[in-house]
Image (cartoon, rainbow, N blue to C red):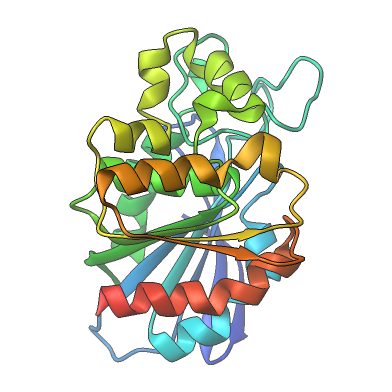
Length: 278
């Protein structure tokens, strides 16, 4: 693992790191914020999964999480959204919603993407092993959150790893990728036409099929340009109601899909997670 940069912030260290990934066959970059701590201490971990077109840098530079993480005693980990590098296949037309920056947190089974697009394995297996090896992480106290495509990833990962994550939340998540254009394009391209395989990466479908988490927190801007066609929080609300999962869905007046929105409510989410990680 190579340290790309390290900066002091609120007494802690904001680091950016690079390593050769066995899962993706590429170099992968991620960021970790580690607050001041006593020698030998183990700290709870928040995983943050980013959205379409993003890298680790978007939330690291614009998420405004460090002050509250330092106050609450949380490690904050932000991986990339897809493999990158020479020879990594991209969308043939260069679209923003498939290929580079749009890995959708699945392990692709369709050529040529199955060579590198193994983001499920990377986020759930390879990167956690690296984090526990190199950082003071208490892997008994983990939670996960994300934005948009990353909200989809956070919800689906939490629902399929109920024993690992104590809490899950999301900003503007794609809650039912099997039913919206972004998700249909990505799941077809990465997983093919087998819709049973899609259901394992669809939060609404996972809940319908019996997956459970203790509670979910979602913030959604009502001025989000993607709300009606791509995000559909109403579908998650319906599934949670039927399953008896406590869902706090907060429609925030006037907010859009940007990091101005995310940074406004980041402290609320981190506080919510910290209460469940104690």
